[in-house]
Length: 190
Ligand code: NI
Image 1 (cartoon, rainbow, N blue to C red):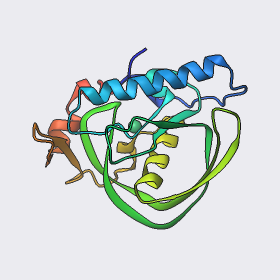
Image 2 (cartoon, rainbow, N blue to C red; image 1 turned 135 degrees about the vertical axis):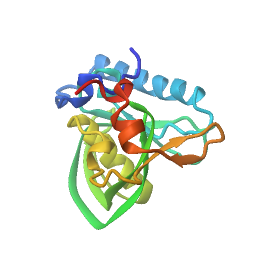
Image 3 (cartoon, rainbow, N blue to C red; image 1 turned 90 degrees about the horizontal axis):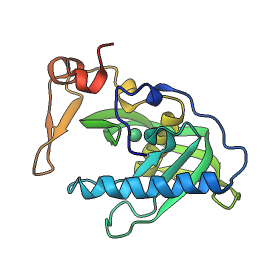
Image 4 (cartoon, rainbow, N blue to C red; image 1 turned 60 degrees about the vertical axis):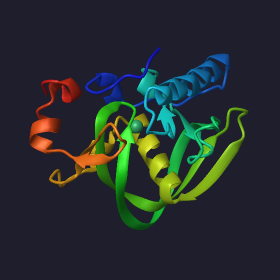
């Protein structure tokens, strides 16, 4: 298994709920942790904050989220199974997002600043999580993946919204029409 990227059609499908948390599910989670860290080794300026199972072609409602978003040496992720947004709140804030499955591209994405979700942990415990700031953004982004939605779908005004990372890790603006829309490597011929 590997991380799949646009325009792979599996990224556009709705994933199914996990019924029983069995060995197969736990193996999927371990594979997700491994792939996230492998990706990070190839991306020195970036931290792999989270990932959803459909990003490796497994259409199940599982996400993993990094416990410490600041320190790359800490490599623990919490898995959330069947995560559901119960409520979004606060105001709409716009900030940068990238995605392991949308290579090279970053965008400014509007999201609710607060979110409340429920999910199951690996041991089957039901948890409710209230998040704001970066974690609220990440949870919305990952749960979107389970419904076949990518961050680019939320960007209505395509002008001045897209960026690329240069070799120093700085984000530089790119022209949407030319470099994003016209890039069949990213979006296919649709
Ligand atoms: Ni993503």
